[in-house]
Image (cartoon, rainbow, N blue to C red; front, side, top):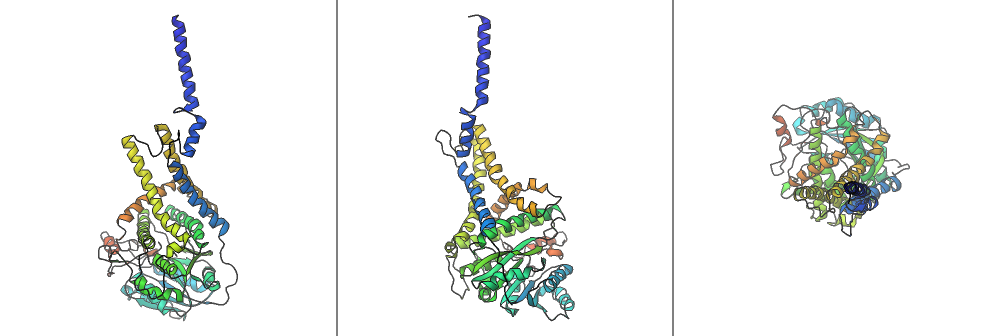
Length: 492
C-alpha cells in the first residue's frame, strides 16, 4: 500500500470520528441524549432527576393554578360591624407608632370603636407616658401596660377589647385606606372563619436594595402560597403584622398560647403561627383576603434580614413538628383535634413540603459532593458530560428558573430600578437552605433576634456588645422571659 493511501486513510478515519463525535454524545445521538436528560433514563437506567424536576415544578404549578385561577377574595357589603384594634408596641419609634395609629383612626371606613395600644412595663416612663399624652383627647384610644413579653401583650389587648371582631396590628405596620374593612369581611360574612390575613408587603420598597429584595420575598408568599391555602380555608400562618380574629375563637386559646413549650423550653417567638394552629385545631377556618393591604418596615441590613429569617425558620420547625407528630395541647379548655393537619390535606401538604424541600435540597447537595469526590454518579446517570448538564438543569432550570418565574408578578406590579436583584434572587433558594439547616439544629433556641434598639420597626442601632444582651435574653434561659425580652414582629 502506498504511503499516501495510508495517510489519506488516517485523515478519513479521523474526519469520520469527528463527525461521529459531533452527531452523538457519549454513544447517543443528539436527540437520544436530550431525551435521556428529560426522561431521566439512559439504556434503561433510572434517574431521580426527572422526579426532582417534576416535584419542584409540580408544586409550583398547583399553587399557580389555585392562586390565580381558583382563589378569589371575599366581596360584598359586610354590614354594620364594630372592630377593636390592638397595637402591641415595644422599642418603637414614636413617629412610626403615631403614623400607624393615625392611619387606623383616619383611613378606615370601618367603625373602629377603639384602638388599644399595649405598651411594655419596661417603657412605663417613656412610650407609655408619651402615648397617653399624644392621644389624651381621643376617646377611642386606650393605652394599657402589659408584663414583659409579646404573648402577654397580645393577651392583655384581647382581654381589654370590647368588640367581637379584633384586629391586631404591629406598631411598625401601616394600613392602606379601606384595608381594615376588607380584612374583616371574611369574618363578618362567614361564621366559620376564625381568622383572616391580608397582603403584608414592604413599606417604601424602592428605597434601597434590601427593601426591594424583601418585598419580592413577601410578594411571592402572598401571591402563591397563601391564596392557594386559602382556597381550602387552611392558611397555616396568619402573619402577625396585621391579622383579624373573631374574639370568641381566639379568647379561649390564650392560656395555651402564653404557656407553649417545646422540649421543655417556654416558647417566645412564633405566636402568630401558634395561634393559627390552635384555631385550625379547634375547627375554625383561616383565610386570606387579598384586597386588604398592609405595609411594614423592612430590616435595614442584610444581616438583620437574615436574623429575621432565621427566627421565622425556627418557629416553622417547631410548629410543623407539632402538627406532623400530633403533639397534644396543654392548657386548652375547648374541644380540639390533635390530628387537625391530617384532616386538612392542603395544610398537611404545606407542612410536609417545608421538610421535603429541605430534604431534597440536602440530598442534591450531598449527592453532588459525594459524586465529585468518588466519581460515582449512580443517582443521576453515568458519564461526566451528561451528569454535569443534568445537575445544571436540575439546579438552575428546575429550581432557579421556577423562582424567576414566580418573581414575575412582583416585577409586573412594582417595576423599579433595582431590577438587577432579579438576577441574584435564585441564590436566595440556596442561601435559605443554609438558614433552614441551621435552624433545624437550633430550633429550640428561644428568643427574638431583631428588635435590638429603639427605631422604626425596632431596628435602631445599639452600642457594641449591647446587641447580644438585647437579643439573647431567652436563648439560653430555658424560655423564661427576662427583662431584655423582645416583642418584634412574629411573622412565621
